[in-house]
Amino acid sequence: MVELVVISGKGGTGKTSILGAFAALASRKVLCDADVDAADLHLLLSPRIGEREGFWAGYKAFIQPESCIRCGECRKKCRFEAVSEEFVVDEMLCEGCGVCAYFCPEGAVDMRPNLCGEWFVSDTRHGPLVHARLGIAEENSGKLVSLVRKQARRVAEEKGLDMILTDGPPGIGCPVIAAVGGATAVLIVAEPTVSGHHDLERAAGLARGFHVPVLVCVNKADLHPPSADSIEQWCRGHGHQFVGRLPFDPVFTRAQLVGKTILEHGDGPARTAVMELWDQVRSFLGSGLQPSFDREAFSGKS
Ligand code: SF4
Ligand code: SF4
Image (cartoon, rainbow, N blue to C red):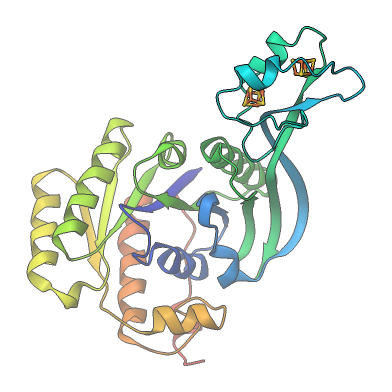
């Protein structure tokens, strides 16, 4: 089983569009949207939800009015000002630390498991997709990332598929750490700017810390070729695999607007480039994979 995780140093680099194109090109794979804070792969793939489960993480305090003697101890001890003057806990403010329950003389505080969101296993025109929705203002997205990756692996094993294509979160925070560990490789989508180069260095450093091989591509490379050259040189000097450049192409936006991958919409310059990129990535991932796609299937305009 191989897992490719596509990440970027920041949001908006085009990583989901690239992952969507890979979804159209690869065969025998499970798709996984691990960008749970801003999940949007489903917008390209129009999933039909099959399995649906709650994501429970942490606790919230609940004061039982019939047991509460209104002594005020919980209000005094709560550092997050989550207990109102009427001794009702505001769920949005409660961090689930349990201090109120510990100090309540009447045992009137229940710590209840917190429903943070949902996760799904869906069918799409490009294969099974495991994805999730985190509730508003909910945290624990790293835990949810681990969960959707684990479920993607389960689905792959059940269906006898040998690849997982994961849309990872941007940045270098907890969700990315949860997305990268144990992957076969990460593909970092960089932008040809000075800040894009710095973002790349930080994301590559994170992957290196987990001993995960790093592949790099530059999106919108033609907007500033010297920066794309500098990124390519940096990759060669640091042992990272530079796998290609994609040109700026409005098809990225147009395809998103109509809920398609860039291979299924129009015939811009990015189309050929992304096919070549997939060839490079696939050859890195290993020869044990099945033939990936039929170019002829994507040769016509839509
Ligand atoms: S500490 Fe317990 S009894 Fe006192 S106000 Fe809070 S919930 Fe009520
Ligand atoms: S669990 Fe912690 S944050 Fe929530 S109400 Fe109690 S003391 Fe405040």
